[in-house]
Length: 88
Length: 88
Image (tube, rainbow over all chains, first blue to last red; front, top):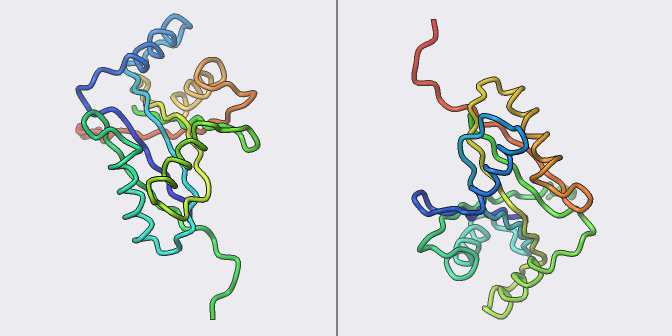
């Protein structure tokens, strides 16, 4: 089972990397870019096959390692894989 | 209009940061994490209101600045904002 986690800075937390991208885009002639925020996306391949258990485990990973919850927010998407076998 | 870009390493490109996360999760007792890939998510707020034009502009930004297309793949999602005004 695949899980995708987005870790982004919370609103109000300064994002210098995003601001640097916004300015670079402006100097390159891309007008109308009002704001840019940069975050991380983490894709995990899990052995767990129960979506609820997988989501709970990934949320725990976020709390303990993947996100700094003081300044970052995260969201978890579970993408069950297509099962090629026909279940009885 | 909002755009969200995912920039991830292409398959086959070594991802030491993802591998470091995978090992850290293993040492923390999270079993069954088979692989981890880390990428970037870039959220842009655009003045453009036409979704097709916005997507074309963001794809150009990806090709020119946001992604290193030799080793990175990108995908673009356009999220039109809810328009509070009633259009005539």
